[in-house]
Image 1 (cartoon, rainbow, N blue to C red):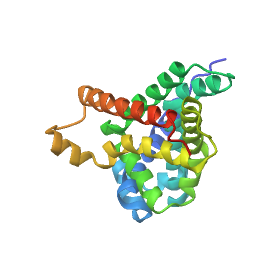
Image 2: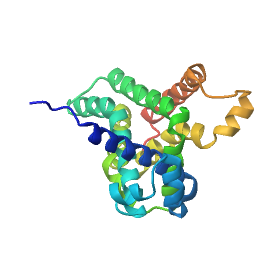
Image 3: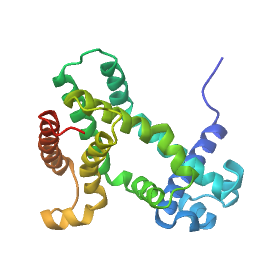
Amino acid sequence: MNNSSSPSTQRGEQARNQLIAAAIAQFGEYGLHATTRDIAAAAGQNIAAITYYFGSKEDLYMASAQWIADFISRNFRPQAEAADALLRQPAPEKAAIRALIDDACRQMIRLLTADETLNISKFISREQLSPTAAYQLVHTQVISPLHEHFTRLIARYTGCDEQATETILHTHALLGEILAFRLGRETILLRAGWTQFDEERAASIHRVVARHIDWILDGLTQGEKP
């Protein structure tokens, strides 16, 4: 039996993906004030395709949030699985914990300095400031689990209480260092004299962030605990 998709199915999937990409870009710029007409035009699709594939603009908004959740999950699955395995150990080696924290940060830097993820960042930034059900979807499915993994890794490394609010705040502050390179993108490009983020620039950012992580982890380990 041939399990390959039919041409019509492939065309439908392509149209759906084009609409999602256009929707994320438009919603990232204008939120729910974005029009279905502009989304369809940006996707190169008939406006009726939105109703056909998604139902309504609100349904398309939620579908966009689901796509983003899936994208984040896919890109951090190796780190999440490695964290699960490491945290199941009764006494994981600190070097292994530090390596996993570094790997996760490196992946965050790679994604947050990539031009192709800019629209995703705009979408999520809008939801952070004015949350809707879409943010709750992304938060529940990926952001909260990844944030929790990071907090637990930091707690295991430093001996802090992983349930303590201050440990969660330390985790968030550490992640914020990386997010600053996305949210303050133009500032750092102008201050550093860069024209764009590329692999070399991302590596420079990682070297700085890695040193800061070491200072934070060492400081917490030496007694600056909640």
